[in-house]
Image 1 (spheres, rainbow, N blue to C red):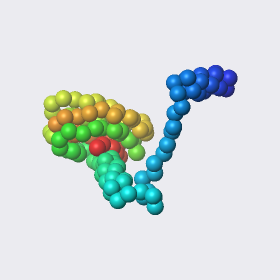
Image 2: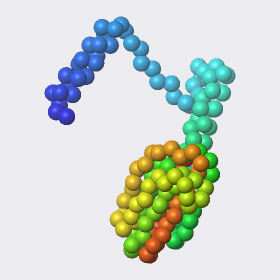
Image 3: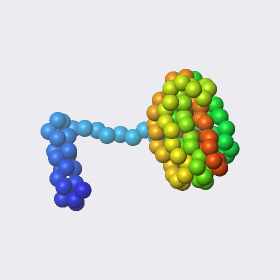
Image 4: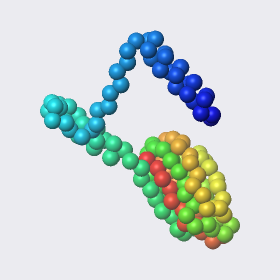
Amino acid sequence: MKKNTLLFILTAVFAMVGFLGAATLSYSPLVPQTSDSALIIANKAAVSSARLAAGNSYSNITTATTTSAKSGAGVLVRVIVNTVGAGSTLTIYDNTAASGTKIATMTTAIQCSQEFNVAFATGLTVVSASGSPADITLVYR
């Protein structure tokens, strides 16, 4: 995007905000402040804990095997091929077994990080098969 185009867009946005009335933008850090009430401090602590708990999990696979990484609903965030495998494939299922709804089949002949960000309902199972196995990392939540 060119510099002049960006300046035009920003000018238009600020003009809209002025047209719609004064807007107050504020930022409330999750670190308790001396002016915070006990309720606000407790809320910030709860939000901070929830953010930590909502992080991603991972499973590292280095052999030709079937891996049930997660049981129940979740999100497949990414698949990382750390070290390539000769002629190997990776099949990903929305299930707790190597069957059912197939999410994807991919080659592991190329070192990559493949973003998925797809929901699964039953579970997350991965089959690493054929040839020389790759070193794979699944990232999910």
